[in-house]
Image (cartoon, rainbow, N blue to C red; front, side, top):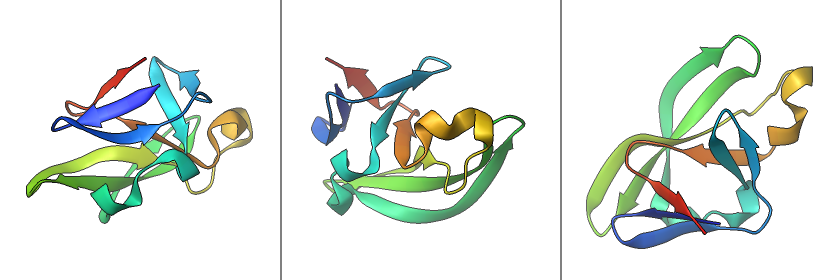
Length: 93
C-alpha cells in the first residue's frame, strides 16, 4: 500500500492494519522528511488519545493529515506504532 499526497508517496508498506476503513502504516514506513509534529490531539473512546502530523510536500502544507496513537488501549494493540491518513491523502495499492 502507498499513501500519496501532492503527487508524492509519503508512506509505503505491504504490512498495513485496517481499522475503521483506515490503513495504519508501520511508523518506519513513513518518509519522515514530509512529516512535522503537530500540537493537535483528539480522543477516541476505544483507541485512546491521538497525536497528529502535518504534511509538507513541495512547499504545500496539509495540517493534521496523519495521526497515530502514542499510547493505545488494550483493544487497539494492533495499531501501536502505526500511522494513518485522511484530509485528501490517497491510500492505494
